[in-house]
Length: 600
Image (cartoon, rainbow, N blue to C red; front, side):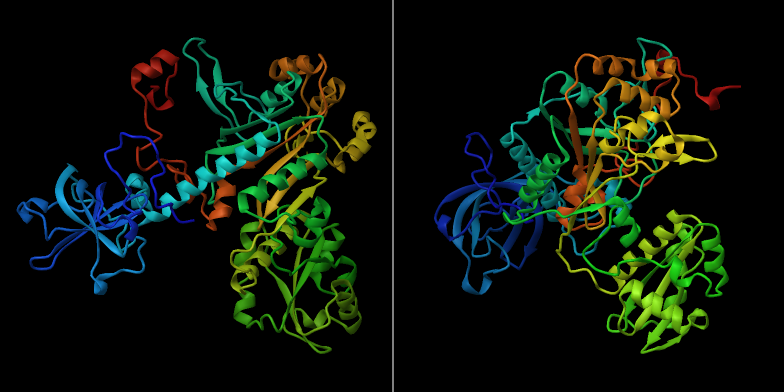
């Protein structure tokens, strides 16, 4: 992830002849001009040195042959300077083998301060790390650090490699509008009031979904775009209100083609060899084994469903959950991996609580003896059933997760598994494990609202084999219907997701009907799209990669802000420019907006 040492230009006209990271013994005797920031200065009593720094590295400047007064060199750290001098070898006892330029220095003949720096709030290359808020407030200073510049370069290279892969496969890059139409479903829109059309708004796109499908109707065949998307939703470490997406749509594509394309992109981005493949796992299996539709498969601790094994054992928590058609899951940690103390097991309540869990049941197994936790309910018969279901044949600890809501049991088991993956050192550093998860649920039924919601978006094709059931509108069949949807997963993150699209007008109308749209509402929100479908639509499919998350994985960081040049905080603010901020009253007036706190 290191920066290149060369500035990478063959064009004439720069103020410098070389970067601050490329001089070696090959340039000894040459006159060079360098530009950069004052990184460090040292006055050794008659010997004066400055380290000059730019994006590409450091060079030591020596002033023993400088003819002007050394007092003219006194300038602050982070000031921008320009120097001209001759490259010479460092004395043998002064060679720095940790620097690319450590065998040489520049004997300065001319020195110019291009821009004086006031005392900075923190030094980008200082030994004392600034607080996160301070670094975000002065993001432009933090960007001077090697770490962030390396990440900026990594992101740039990733975008280049993505384009190379897609252009080689015959894709056309097309830009779609940022000011577009607000649509229901999905996350909350960011809206932009229109001055020209009072009372009406544009929406910033959550995704160019309908637009890229219209491009397929318009015979674009293979489209891609590296685009900005916007979602007004709660934030977390791997999510931002605006994000970059590698957006892809293909006519006449099967899921196999989309998977092969995604594999090719990943292979190029991560530099994998030709034998690299991505295994496929159905959604139902991912939930059964890992309790997550984006499982981290770099380590084991797979789950087992043990309702039948513990039913009737007399443990009231399990009996109540099973009576309510709930779910009991378990996984096993061998004694060789970890022998847990009572305090460590009790602390797991804090791991599951954010996911709706009330605690974690457990017992230890030593030979045929059980102890601790719920061991008094574990008869030899129950133990044999558990061992048969889980495949356990060694000593260790069983952990159980039970809830009337299947989603809560899955989430608690998943959270604990991931917790152990980190705390027990089960994850190999630098390891990448990819997974293609498919056959996601098509719809989610909300008992309180008495209606279906799309699990993805309302343009996702139902499983082709189930189309007749979908068109029948039978509620029970719809509840268990799978979609032609898929995700690319890496190390516990959703790296990309997509689906085969609905391309038949009648199927699309039925989808709107299933989702509870009246004919008038569907026409108002999607009339243009429904009409377009009626003029001959090729079968098509797509996928979108989260560019920020992809680079985050490539960089080996777990904070998405690291790989965005100017990120926002967890509450969607920009500390550097104080955004969002109030608009001028005249701007509000022009848009016909009256703020609530201005009303009397």
